[in-house]
Length: 481
Picture 1 (cartoon, one colour):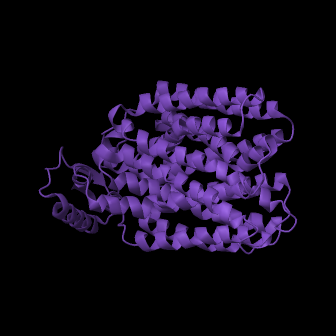
Picture 2 (cartoon, helix red, strand yellow; picture 1 turned 90 degrees about the vertical axis):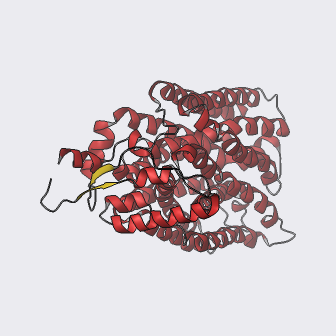
Picture 3 (cartoon, helix red, strand yellow; picture 1 turned 180 degrees about the vertical axis):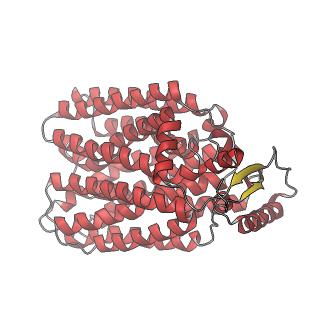
């Protein structure tokens, strides 16, 4: 222990985890969780209006440029996740989830004023750069503020709101793509302005979300953390009455200012190699699947089923709703049935459904509404699996590495799966139905592999305090001292 190290005892984790559900927790969910609506809108909007962007009277992009624009957004999100993730662990959750939302707002407004592929791609990169930082800051804050009993269902439901944004994107596209209402070169620009408007409303609510007391106490600000938890308890008490006593003994920690990259890497990959491989597998496989389908969705519908580009987004509204309902309706089971059986089961069942859909498309034995119905059923299950991947990464590593671990695995997994997926799907669209079948079969195989990895190395984290799932480095340092 260094001469100036400060070792303290605290019950803040157990005080937070024993709180009954209250209106205060709903405020956290709304203030932090609604940002995924923006991410869903941003990722979906290019796929939904992709056919319009190829119109010479709009931006005049090629099909490949549309898919590359989606990939560039993902690259920006991956870069932003790494950049902001380290800062989130170093400077706190609240500062970063305010800054990253501001970056998103500026970039998405800029997208509406682009005039070429180069400017469009640049604006999309920085839009993703802002949203990417949200993954580390938001998932860290949610898991550290929500009681252990509710953590799984809240995390899945919050990540599932991504599909509300996707559905808004599909539905809004019907309006902005109607050339009878808006000129061809104006409607698609308004779609990005809508995202900025939503971002401003979320920013207003988010100002009231507090810093994570867990982060504060580790970083030498225990008095502020104690006062903050006192205030939280007072608000919850006013809402639900008397509170139960915290369980367990206080934890002893050695406070620190920051955790270096070297220590983070040694912890994540040296101490928890199986959890690291599990995290990468879960996130990479779902990233391949979702980005491949999202960025090519309207192209498949228009090319394979002869739907007009203006009407194509309407067919994707049921798919977006199914994704949202899957994450929300299945979320409770991840806290009751358990993490391992639910995560492995959702990845496995969705793999089987995707394989069946690919075979049906390849045999040209399914129509447009049959395709949408089967797609919606597969992704009803897959959306719970995808959200559970983010839940896993945010739970299984120590407090001091949490944000950076989320950022790293999101970045590397999405960077690989999120760029390869659209490119693979985009490359087969212009060939034949068998090419689309091949894409779905590849995605199904990857999802099945993830199910097997979860079944072997998954972590039974349901109902457990975060500090028991992975002991904080500062607690280990205090024991050594």
